[in-house]
Image (cartoon, rainbow, N blue to C red; front, side, top):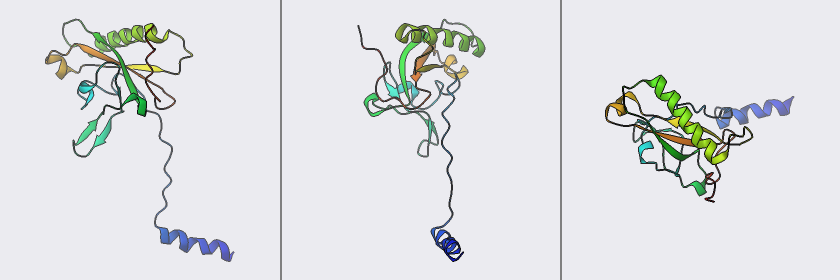
Length: 155
């Protein structure tokens, strides 16, 4: 018994002990990143980037360009141009998922065995009002980070 009780002062001297749960993978929907997320408009086709993270200097969540070779959360694999018209989020989301899904299938096939998934990054009502009609398509690995570019080599 003496040995057990001897640990309590040692633990108390170290301060509060916190157990941090494993971070759950992000659910990447058409609302995960939008055209209004700081930094996303700086990402070009084929470039890799981080998931949004709060930046105290910016005072908001931002995404950052990340060299694909260094590992990244996402990679842009194309853009889908949306026809002009009134902003309708539901119709835009359906169009974005179809368009990015077709581009994903062109690049990686429509196999359900792929370790990759995709999501669209859409204009918002505010960016739409400013003339934004482009959807960015982003690939990611649900099981973890990308370890390099996932784009197929040109054939």
